[in-house]
Amino acid sequence: MDRRQSVVVLMSAVWFLPAGAQVFRNPIINEDAPDPTCIRAEDGMYYLFSTGAKVFRSSDMIHWEPRGRFFTPEGRPSFVPGVRYIWAPDVNYINGQYVMYYALSKWGGEDSCGVGVAYSKTPEGPYTNINGTGKLFRSFEIGVRNSIDPCYIREGNRHWLFWGSFSGIYAIELTSDGLALKPGSKPLRIGGKAYEGAYIYKRKGYYYFFGSIGTCCEGARSTYTTVVARSRKLLGPYVDKSGRKLLDNHHEILIHANDRWVGTGHNAELMTDKNGRTWMPYHAFDLNAPKKGRLVLLDEVKWDRDGWPYVEAARPSVQAEAAF
Image (cartoon, rainbow, N blue to C red; front, side, top):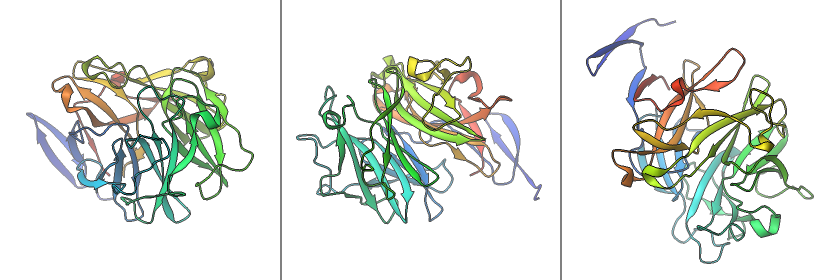
């Protein structure tokens, strides 16, 4: 093992870090990029996608460059009449191509909104909608109000989509290419009505549900908080540390506001650096400049002796070091 060390001097303090580690300060993306999703692509680069169809690229998860939009103006989805704004994308590499799930919605459109799917040979797109429109399902068709915030996970040879927003969190099985609902599959409720922004992460025999509670989009008054529950099975039951069920709106707090950041929620995929440490991108409002929108922060998720995730002090950090 290479034990050379480098010295990093920052704000009159000194850290002795392994060669290649980088000190960074939050935010990692200093512009409005809400509801982030992140993937390390086949080209070795990291790509982050956000509400509003934005794409960013990075080699180290810290320094990001804008890469435009993942839909062309002509290629935007059209399955919700009069709605063109894309929410909460989720990008995955499935069977040799990049598959994006996303929500198409407007405020107050709990019954008209829905989940779409598109695909691309390259991670940053442009993405092509299935069937021209992109529709996977709409709320009134599938019987789940506020069908937004999709999240894909593969378990063995089976493919699943989790989604929902304050009307319950649901799961449904997909076809092997991830582009359609599996014939005969029905929504299965796995979480109560307190949550949105679902994300499922598997680690050491447990499935961890990460989600957000509170208000996402009220600037300095936002109350978004990231929470967690876990299960031995993908479809639950998910529980808190006391064994109380996510279906009954029980969970553990992972990260909440501090005196600088509020609205800490809708985390992206957990990413692992070269030292085996786990990191979580998520969005928040800067109380010093709330009109800038929801910026992207990055914090380490640690694991206690019982396998529960936590963030130090359950609050956003000012600075940290990582080695991606």
